[in-house]
Length: 278
Picture 1 (spheres, rainbow, N blue to C red):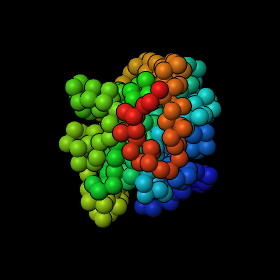
Picture 2: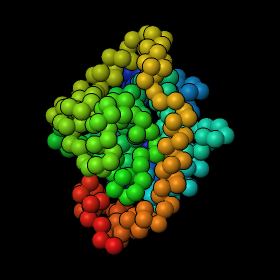
Picture 3: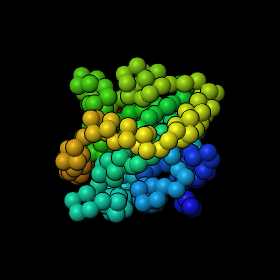
């Protein structure tokens, strides 16, 4: 079975598909990356072949995925819609489908995972991160919006009500150790140990009888995942909020300072959203 994409590098070994995001220095979730992720997920549903576990990481040492491409929201939404049916035209519903894919998925995070990039990681079954280099954040409140692709649903279930309100309305960055302590991620590991740990766990799970693993995941998903209606509601609210004049003014201000380009604003986005000057 071939896994051949323009923005994802793949390697299949011992039942584990290593899928490395390679969509530019920021790994923005845009048209091409969403298209490739949709193809990957559809393949895993239709015929996973020998794949038992998927490990998603990044070719960039600084960005797992910075966030969605804010200049192409309608376009990447159209690509995401190809993964679902009528009424499911949103990145959130595509990531909800990823969360239910019939293999185990692991996000291995180095660098920054914010906004939709963090929501991609949250849609995976597990997240392991570099203690020295990983940063997580949902910055949308700082621009007048909210997480629209599952972040609100996942973080509320993982962190609890009060910490989810802190993380989402505070719109700040969370280093890996704090993210681990809050329950955002499974573990923060020393960077030098991260690759070996994730590979060992992935191959361990891939070596077990697959039907039992899939049954366990289905049962856990049934107890913990959001209802589709809630994901659709968040997506619709996000789409409405980013069109408001105040949100557009803040996004335009950030764009003028270097949003979506490698540099200070993207490195310190949790701080940058507090520095709006009308």
